[in-house]
Amino acid sequence: MSRGSSHISVDAKGRMAIPTKHRDALSSDDGAALVVTISATDRCLLLYTAPDWAEVEAKLVALPTLNPQIRKLKRMLIGHADDVSMDGSGRVLLPPALREFAGISKKAVLVGQGDKYEIWDEAQWLAERDSIYDIELDEANLPDELATLAF
Image (cartoon, rainbow, N blue to C red; front, side):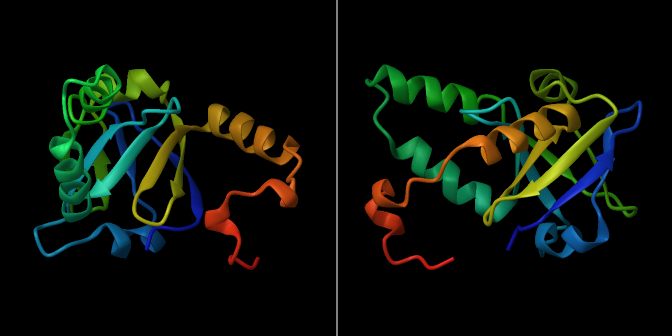
């Protein structure tokens, strides 16, 4: 389960050290194989374990490609997906093109999302986080999927 957030540094080579508290969620039996891709909705990256990504990718591949929105989504998510791995020091090398897309240089934030992590440029994450807090929550207009959720 991917949850919580951590501020992290990215070195000159584009490697980020995964904080110890997140390493177990990203480790798997296949040598810590991971997949990183761009977000379809935000200027951030998405980091999946290989098994979790395989499920997402299979669902995407099964979608019909005659729909132009689906083609765009596939191009974005599958077309930018890159296999990465965690080294013995818990570092992951983020591909340059993906770092450029997300505007990640020296400081980043790893944000758990349950089945994946988001990787944000620190300044962009702080602005996004602040904008979330500015939104008034209208409990009367919550989606039906949230009707039974208590928090």
